[in-house]
Image (cartoon, rainbow, N blue to C red; front, side, top):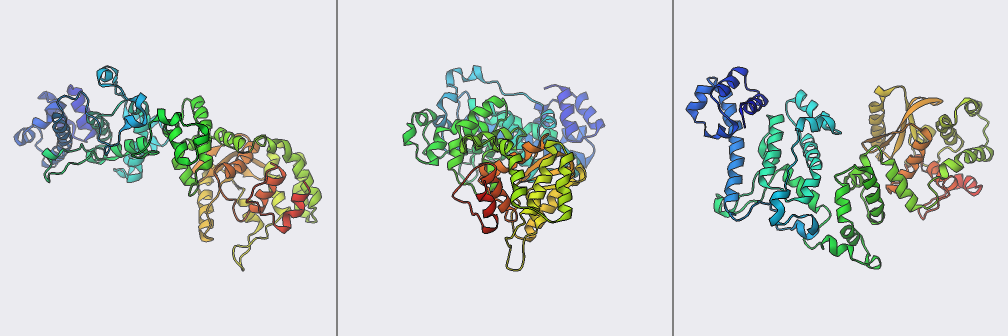
Length: 501
């Protein structure tokens, strides 16, 4: 490495220009940093505080390198030192992805990327840079996100090669270069063999990078997992539980946990893994998103539709086909004498087809008000019922506040926040629908599509209808989508509607 690199490194450590100039003037390279004596540093850097900072930073780098060299020296015949995964063999999972020793050297080409550019162009990456710039450090959530983005970026390399300690050090080096106040040990510490250990015990590799790779490779496996080739030969009639399904689709699951492109491959692998999602029990929606992070992609409404179509064949288009006639029948079954509601009904005549949906849902909420109770003394209101389907905000700046208010209201009643829609504008003049699921915001350009996806989400993600609006969701399920399930509870005050369709 040349003087330019040493200058960049010292700049990232926030070392003054004068001292950087001393290093460059004396021809000090990064490789020579660990050879500098106390007298050398005193000559290069007269300022005591800065000298202490330099010692700490240099110590972090040299310690990590020394650990790597010591471990490599214990395996002189090995061309590539591989990570210790607690005696779990990745080759047992995916034998076709591990390069053999004879060709491994030629095929290795560790991805060279600029971490700053990666973060600037990745979802959530810019927030890491902003947080560090503002706070001067990274908290644990930002460190986890940072590690996640890096590992996802080099996913293909990881599944085709056994990542080495040197490569872990390179990744950790990129992190502390961009974030100089971070400790390299947070992200990677080399393993130590018994002969080099102070207490005579070996220590496995540690750090967030190692943990992420381990979780990635063994998220769906255990010590007894069969190889991918063995699993794919299991006859369909012998696949009886989720463990078998996980084994069969282990590679697809792993790929989906790290990739969202090419989208055609996402679609293909998503369809293949449908049975696993269908048979798996999840604690909540957040748990599903942890298992299937690709659902956070803005295009994942397509994935929702795929699962819904597989779950209920020939029902996926029923919202578009039946909604308008359903609404007209509702007006006949439940007539109103409320003059203000009559005015709202009349206002539909002047609205475009897509813009009518929120008003029609609002009318439905008033024609069929909730009669359920939270407690003996607390009854759900009509507005609470509607708010569990959609809410309106005046502008973009109000969205986060509206989301927080939904959480606070639910918390006050000891309820969970189920999926709902946020519309910008008024009831009869709204735009930019957002489907809110947990902490994810899905953007739609079409209101009808947003409402259709909202309903499908409940079935695909195995979510319960919100208590305040469960009767409306059930009416839509039975009368619009023509779907009947064993969980349906057709209460008395909606039985006339359900029976009329």
